[in-house]
Amino acid sequence: KTARCATIEILEAGHPVPDERSVSAANKILSLAAKVREWESRGEHCLVIMLVSGGGSALLCAPLPGITLQEKALTTQLLLGSGATIQEMNAVRKHLSAVKGGKLAQAFAPAEILSLVLSDVIGDDLDAIASGPTVPDNSTWQMVHSILAARNIMEQLPASVRNAVQNGAAGKIPETPKLLGPNSKNSVFNNTKTVLIGNNMLALRSARQKAEALGYKTFLLTSRLTGEAREMARLFSALASDVAEYGIPLARPACLIAGGETTVTLRGTGLGGRNQEMALAVLTLLDEKKPGHRDAVFLSAGTDGNDGPTDAAGAFASMELKMVAEQRGLSALEYLQNNDSYHFFEQIDGLLKTGPSGTNVCDMQILIVP
Image 1 (tube, rainbow, N blue to C red):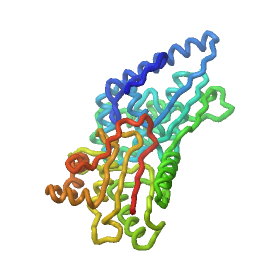
Image 2 (cartoon, rainbow, N blue to C red):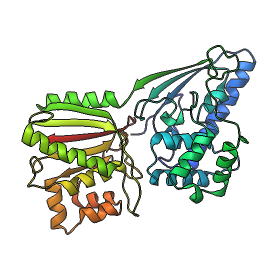
Image 3 (cartoon, rainbow, N blue to C red):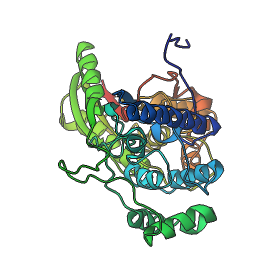
Image 4 (cartoon, rainbow, N blue to C red):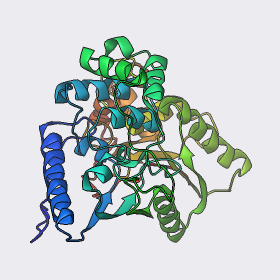
């Protein structure tokens, strides 16, 4: 259902790659900021309440002058396919933006700002969530240059982006707003306050509570799962066997829960997301001869209901699904090598489609060994 608000305008935009709607949304907010500054100049004190969540990096897009939306979108796609962490991606995004990295707070200054934040970042780094539009930025142009070079995508970037990064690293483009200290009279953050109202751990604890209500012994592994999605699959494959054979870290019926945000380094041309990729990798490792694998069920999903550029939140893995794939002549390994997890699971009814959840607090992995 579409939400209807009497006084709040709802703007939809592209994610994880920004689109024209993303630019339109940013322009509207910047226009509002201009009005707020005008009101402040007339002595009318303003309180600006900002609701910030994961996804804001794409949903709110205002490229630096000289950089087009298409060039910013291509840069985002290159970062997504390079295996860059969210912190690395957002360091780049902040420096190529007119609203991120504290610049939105700068646009509204000197108004009072209260930011209520939902975290989709491991460790809840406020300057990384939605690329930190209202908090001081700890990254630098030099760091951006190093990230792009380390990810081997510098030469693939549009010329305008590459030039901006090189000029920024040389000190020719101003840095993002930094924290100048509590007594600094010219800090744009003197009148800002940020409150974290939700994160991945909150979601994991809710999942644990539900699993316990269903009669499972539960174990919350971590809220900081990182690394290549297909490599993390080995962890869950091993855990299924340890639970069945040794009762470690707990006995059956067991439900192991984890969360975080993994990465995918694109090697193929298929369609999918990090959660579907992890589930597919788990499926390739399932072996009915190994303890626990015959009955184990695994799910990896995004809490926002969208995994990568797909309409699925994630996917399931089980021996039952593996046998269905084999009966239909589908090679899980071949699909994995082509990063084509979506089309694989689509053919065996293994996708989880929840629709947009309205929130975003990283990913969740659930392993059940009954």
